[in-house]
Length: 158
Image (tube, helix red, strand yellow):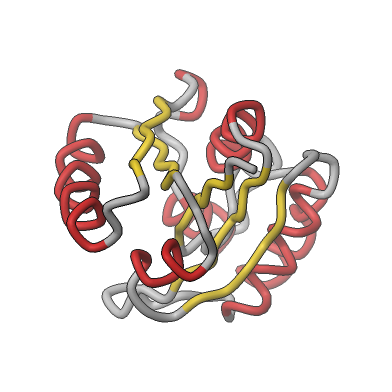
């Protein structure tokens, strides 16, 4: 079984994330959407809340599961027999950062390859921080996040 992981903070998950997850699910037998702890980010939703939002948003995507992890991604990859780390790329700045991470992960978990999937042009500008800002000021985020979680996001951030 070819297993992949899509790691991220997902605070909250966006349509851009969903697009990458769907496309990864077409390439691998099992895709774990992994809510990771990033000490450099101050999240609005708890890891458990983010996992629940992701479960709702990915319920219709075959082969996708959701997990939580705090630690080195390479450790999770090795412990779970994962062959690929899937990362979405929106811009050249995303690539530069993710390329460095890919090299580090290759050194720490030699059996796993990083696979870059480019963002769909309609999602290239969408980010979790943009969603948080729009919702905080009472804007409509329904074009940017899965319909199944719009109400929860707006309720939390308004």
